[in-house]
Image 1 (tube, helix red, strand yellow):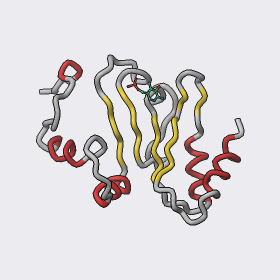
Image 2 (image 1 turned 90 degrees about the vertical axis):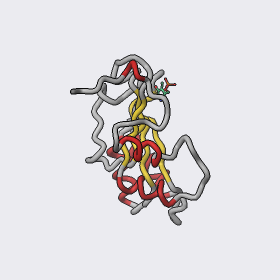
Image 3 (image 1 turned 30 degrees about the horizontal axis):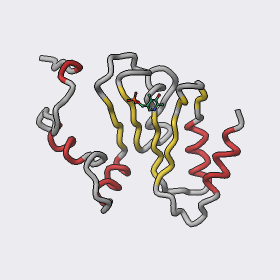
Image 4 (image 1 turned 120 degrees about the horizontal axis):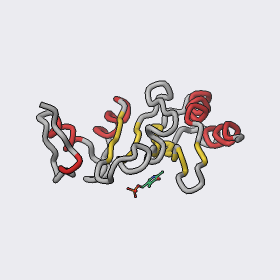
Length: 140
Ligand SMILES: *Cc1c(COP(=O)(O)O)cnc(C)c1O
């Protein structure tokens, strides 16, 4: 694999830092090709690129090494049905403070990608929408 070279090309192709986010699939499920997220982070850091790093880890989380904090991933998107080998029905986002701040400041109208509803309701143990109750177990 020679991904570091291509990551460097991608990151240096935006010298004015206009990209708001770099979005990458960690494990391309049908081919099994894994992206080296740590190399991508290094390439972004090498040009001081401030973009958010967003990773689709649907088929990789719990199946291949993934280090959100160490690789400074801003948003990890995953679901219950593949890498975690659970029934379908749940999806998860792990979100950095930087991504939460970007979400609060963004002016693009949105609903589905707005985390504020779920964060507010989760503080009291609830969901803003109908959850997959068959997938949830509340510990006493
Ligand atoms: C399956 C898959 C998705 C989409 O998830 P579904 O909820 O099953 O449609 C996204 N990314 C990757 C890498 C996947 O393997």
